[in-house]
Amino acid sequence: MSNNYEAPPKRITVGGIEVSMPYAKLMDLSRMLPDPASALSLVMNDSVTQDYIVRRALTPVDRVVKSEEDLISDTEVDLETDDVEKLLTWVVQHILYFFVKRTQGLAKVGDEFKAALPSLSTTGSES
Image 1 (cartoon, rainbow, N blue to C red):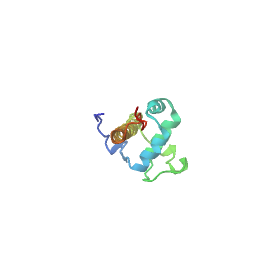
Image 2: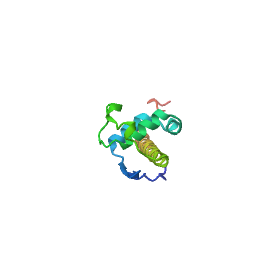
Image 3: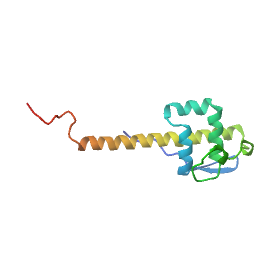
Image 4: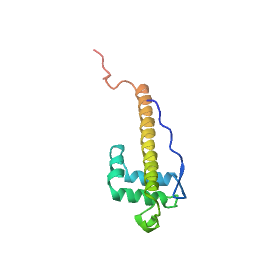
């Protein structure tokens, strides 16, 4: 499986605010978008998901948040529509990149172990 995907930038600027993607933020956001099949649909169609993603991305903490009360309030989000779209796209790129890299890495490990282990079809007795 070849990797033709380039990692999204670690930081972007939206509405004059620099936003970064530390590990804790990526994990928080991944919980909202747990699988690639639903990620795009949720981000495009679900306003609750969109709101959480925007507020979590803009919340300046580099730790896992425990509840929505740890996020900036909706009144603190002062972005133009184009900036919201840019931010949502950047977050989805990070999450999908993480899915792809994780899947490729685990597939490689699985292939290596399959090659190293004896065939499962061998029963131990030969006739």
